[in-house]
Length: 510
Image: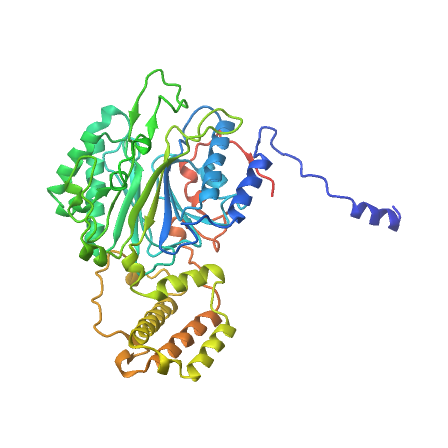
């Protein structure tokens, strides 16, 4: 060939890669485009926009449905599209299988925005898993898996300590589980629920913080009553655990998560409506003793003193999702509706320190304070702004500077590690200091200007040291942006649990 011919051939567009597997499942490009567009859109008000709220989604996505691989893929894509549109900070999945996780976490879908937490050594090909939003949730300690010893279905629960929406000083323990199925397994299911309630009470007793657990409990109301009674005898703290649906008003439209009169996925010839999927939580001072009330209403305390003491996450709204059929399929994303709960910090806790919200909003907007803004702050200090402030304003500036500097120091100390000793929920809480110290100098011995100047210096030090990276904890099943999806990933660990054949190939264009 002549030189001119070679140049012309090189300029031609490359042919599309051939499909090596004629039976490969092709992911619809329009669905992928909608998911990517939703992820790129600004977060809706009340979720990403507010640092004192976050969204949690719990959903049994029916990975063992036997209708077919294409059906399962399209239903999984519908789940991915809902996640992309709402962007919950924490997603709890039950009855998920490895091919579904591989699809959900593909870079073209949710992989660039979510990390996954899987159980250790699952005993079945389906299990519980968590998706954690990379910007909205931070893992504070390695997750823990507990297998139910007498389960005949490989059931377990998965627990992890996280900080949501950059609120590292108000962490929470999140638990998800899938209890024994079918009505005949009532005794085993009550035993499993009792074990989860005791574990949740123990987590709550380790230090003051919110503990929540959600999942497919397969439980009837009378079974919940029996499990509460059994666990209460061993842990009185179980009475502090309340039902999020009841707490949020017991709306009838959001009651039944398994409804064969509406959901036709199973093709049942009978009508059954059950509240299998539930969410429970305990929050210090707010839910104390409320779990013993029973019934379908709670006496939510209006005591102002309790509201002022409350500085932990509380459920604020509850809704069911996934009640629209998948386009082009005629089936719902799952035979279960998903439960979606909004969590919020009481207003009093967000007023304790103005630095909490201002720091979080700044991080969401730009990631760090610019050096130009810091220079402007230094100029303000040099002009002696503090001399014209009232006593109340001086006090607010003092609290702002102290909280900001303390938070910067803690962030720098924990950078690049998953420090279990400092951040694990199981460690006893440290006693509060009567006088906050910044840089080993008591606040009482400094002027407001000096304190604020040191807070700005710490902020600049953090900015100059580069962005924080999440540690990869391969042994615990967390896959982060620093861990490749190939060798050493969570899916390689689970290879022994996957069937040797009948696994479809999913063709997802880059």
